[in-house]
Length: 207
Ligand code: SIN
Image 1: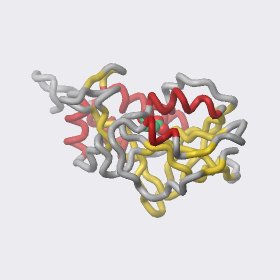
Image 2: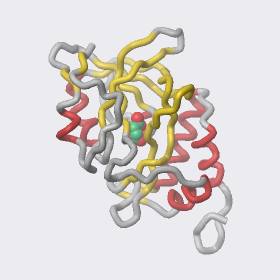
Image 3: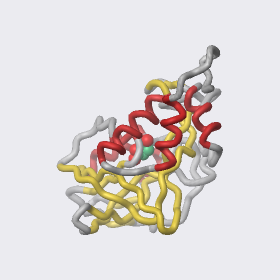
Image 4: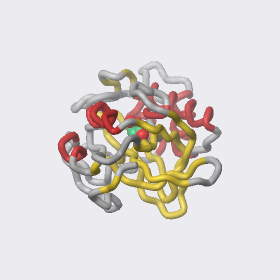
């Protein structure tokens, strides 16, 4: 397993492209494998190799659609909204842990470069065992940060956004489906998914 060279628990303000900073955040030189925690698109778009995977959770973090996406599910002019984790005492975020080789972070750093930093955290597996792991978290105040908004405003923004990876709407609906498949209740994501599933008015907007 990896050893950390940076505590990583304090939010760090990052520029939009986090590839260079992420390469400096952990020392994988003695690690044969590392646990990666996925909680957003990493749940359903698994375009990286892994050795095994297991449902897991992280304590003290809540999933929120508060990060802007200029590169996957939106554009610089019309950013979409994608998931990040925000510190929240008492919250538990359910996701998927993937055991990956350190080299896999080369691709993950590219995929998650829009404001996400590799964060050290503790994963809890279904049987209660724990392990050190890493999640990509976009901290408050990063250059692509959008922050909180009402469910209706988030749904409206999501409904109108699309980028190179497809419609923002599909990101949220696929995330909601993946969470249901995991048996994870997430009122924030489910509320926005429900709004997106409502019939639209003639202008293509949410009713
Ligand atoms: C994740 O899925 O773990 C990170 C956020 C995302 O790519 O949607």
